[in-house]
Image 1 (cartoon, rainbow, N blue to C red):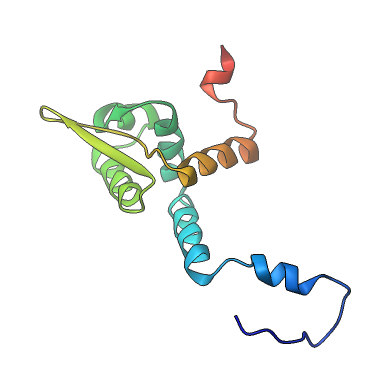
Image 2 (cartoon, rainbow, N blue to C red; image 1 turned 180 degrees about the vertical axis):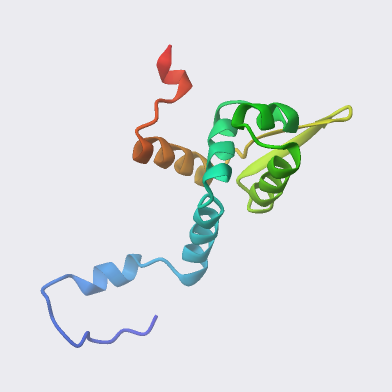
Length: 122
């Protein structure tokens, strides 16, 4: 990034801030992941899959949605890399991806929503 002086000096350490400013690619990745969780139904499904591995029919029953609607949300979450799937016979099972981003988003959801993690309920 080209260094230049700011129009106003507000006493901040601008060089230190600029040094740590994320690039456009990093911000775009985080923005895309957060955009995927901007839908309340998708957010509920993601949170659920942070705590268990489930099939479409069970997810639909838990979140009170139709299987096609759940499948739509699962495709979006999977294409964004937030969840993964595995096949067992004819059944597909889904869970949260084992990535730092997915774990951080899970933690953020629970902190912002003041949601108790099922593991914390023991």
